[in-house]
Image (cartoon, rainbow, N blue to C red):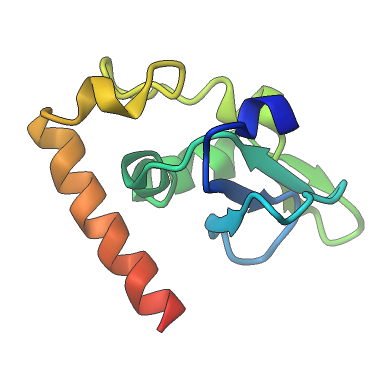
Length: 120
């Protein structure tokens, strides 16, 4: 994971099991625990996509469930890796490749504002 985070100042973190389906940016100085998934991206576009209603509905359908209360459990193999990111906005390409894409710009602007409001 440290190799994947090299060159980044932050990464996206997603709790494995949580009532609220938030993703947050964490400093690369933070070591992810076993109950947190780290996504080696530092761009607002990816965070915005992961905060979208579409991704939320996807996770509700694709999550596994745990415990007596059937609490949703975010799992990369069933949820993140199967999520149908729009062509050109997939997490396997550098964010700089879609910097001029109007879709990416709109998503990034809103996600950056959400993050700003959350942190202040």
